[in-house]
Length: 132
Image 1 (cartoon, rainbow, N blue to C red):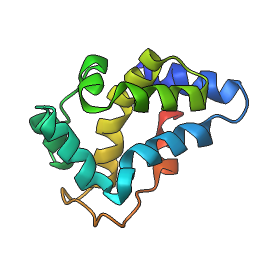
Image 2: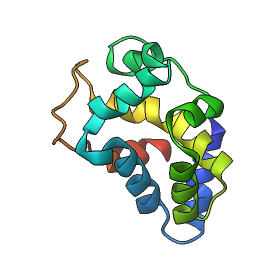
Image 3: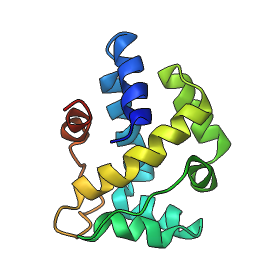
């Protein structure tokens, strides 16, 4: 993990119990409209980032996405809502998602298979890895 995600999570946690809020954010992003990882991947495909997102599921290395690419996937309103909920700036949310989503999706698809849309990955264990 690079320093950005760790810094954001540490700042939120240092501000008073923010790790659950980061977990809630990631859970919200993964479960939008009840679609799970499949719906998230569809959004990345629609934004022209399907190859990157597919790499997170495969057993090979994860391709990175940038905060600017996150801006292509999620609306400004979504990003602003998430930022407000965590007391962060929209650019920080985009950076957090750019760094965390490849790891979270990879963790949720350990065998290279997308879980059913009603299956909710355990975000807590992924966040725990960020502090090791």
